[in-house]
Structure formats: structure tokens, C-alpha cells
Image 1 (cartoon, rainbow, N blue to C red):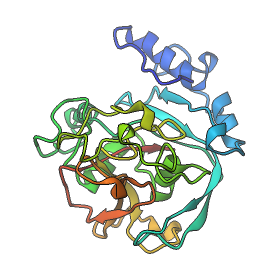
Image 2 (image 1 turned 180 degrees about the horizontal axis):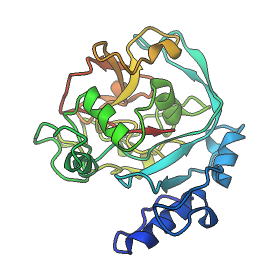
Image 3 (image 1 turned 60 degrees about the vertical axis):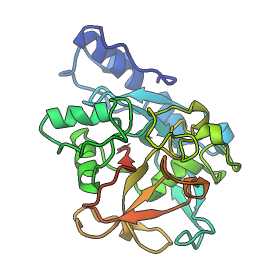
Length: 286
């Protein structure tokens, strides 16, 4: 597994594939190229994640690029564990326990404009609405609906995270208020006082990383989740992939919002066909 880096892009395709594959599952299982049979044996890091029993400070973040990801996006590993979901704000209660019995992966950053463009070029995604708030390939893609976010993740063979997964990846077993801890820190998030009224390049504030190494989970753009908007406690009835009409949950706050909206427990929602300059997303697997 890698520790926050992306393989170089100037190598031959076969060598690059083997190096990325080796970083995920080990060299012996990779064969000589993308057509090779790949073992699904969990890596040592995934095994460690499956038996994790500690708290936020006990987890050493793990990041990798999966060889089957057409976007080549880094993902971070989220270990098993429990946390108290919710907070004291409106629509955040009651606070209730959530348990994760299997590890999962989540994008290290919000999906960028450049990554989303690859899906558009492949004919699998609709073009996002052009706007002045996100123009560079390194900024988060915005003005995408929940439907577009869903389709992009599906193109990568992935899915949107549930709101429970999103909050756990942000807060961890310790239940931090913000991804980095319990106290607000302006130098750790893109919000209205430091954004210049536009989105920032993803990962602008590395110190704002969550306990699993996920960046921009507070600020920059709101993030669609897979979950239907419903009262707590969260359960499986909040997930219905075939419902394209009911409002979906967004998390994380945005570059134009204040500190109260950047809390990891804060919930917002919109209809799945809604798009905004302040809304983006990230994906999860499996």
C-alpha cells in the first residue's frame, strides 16, 4: 500500500499497471498486465483494517490507486469500528451507534474536474454545467446532480458512500466534531473566510485530513451521499438506489459557508436532479 502518492504517468502501460496492482494486492498476484487473473486475497493493510479495535489516533492512514480504476484516483482505507452518529443540531438527532464490520475505501479527495472529464470523454457521464467557481482540472467538479455523481462512480466500478460511511470516515471512533479534531481551525478547511469565493484545488489544506487521511471533508464543496433524506436513526431503509425522486443527503459544507456548516455531523439535502456551484462528491468501494 502507498502512503499518499500517485504512480508516475510516464511509464509503459504494462509496467504502470503491475506497479499499481502490486501496491494494492502484492506483486505475485498481479501477473504481467491488465488481462491477468488477479487474486482477491486481502492485503496486509486490509487484514489490519478488518481486525482494528482502536480509536482515531491508533490508525495509520493507508492510500492506494486501484489498477481497475479508469480515473486513477487515490483512495484511503477505512477500518472496521463503531462510532456515535449524529449531533445536537437540527436533523442530527438522536445520536445513535453505528458499527462497521467490514473495511471500505473512500476517495482521498473530492472528485476533480479532470477526473470527471475522463468519464465524459468515455461517454459514460453527462457534461457538468460550466461555471466560474471551478475551472481547473485540479479543482473539485461541481454543478453535478446526484444522478451524475452516481453515474460517475458506477463508471469507475464504485458507488457513492452512505451518509453513515461518510460521517465515520470523517469523525472516526472518537467522534470528532471536525475531521481533524474537536476545535475549529481556519487553516484546515476551505470556507467563506479563506476561499476567495471559489473552490480550491483539492487537498489544499493537508492538515485538515481526517483520521483515515481523507481530505476536504470539511469545506470546499458539499458532497452527495447515496442516502435518502430521512429521520434518524440511520438504517438500511435510508438506501434505495432505484429511487430517483426523493431528496438525497449531502455532507461536508462548502467554500461559501460558515464554520457551523463544516461540522462532520451536519446534514443537508436536495433533490437528486438539483445542481449547484457548491456541490460535488467522492466515491467509495466496495
